[in-house]
Length: 153
Image 1 (tube, rainbow, N blue to C red):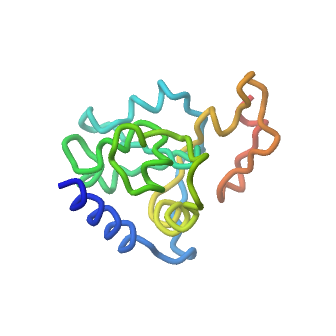
Image 2: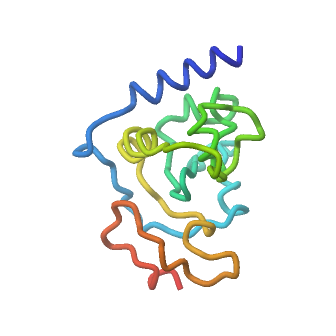
Image 3: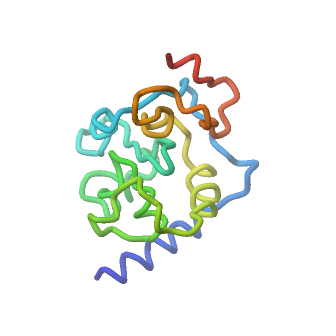
């Protein structure tokens, strides 16, 4: 069953890949999410958007609710930063984290699937802020020309 889910996840990611000209942009301004705030968008409440973070970028995956909604095959990925799980194509609870220190590039999945298909609605605080709470000067928004760190602080 586990391997079947991996194959389906890989197939889904491959099928969903589109070219850069079809990138969807959020109609609302992006915002900063703490881990606790992001958990509220896990697909458990009907009518509430479903959010998922990859590489600290929060995507609105509500249009894919048949995959990410409550009881759906990939619901474990939503309401948190699931970078490692997406990179490894894994639904193992140990992989449902932002930590990618042991992984190779996940840029193809990140850009070719999520950035191409789902609107960016914000960033996790871990991506924008340093551990001490100061702004991360290395932060660069993903395709959000109107977003600046100054807007958030």
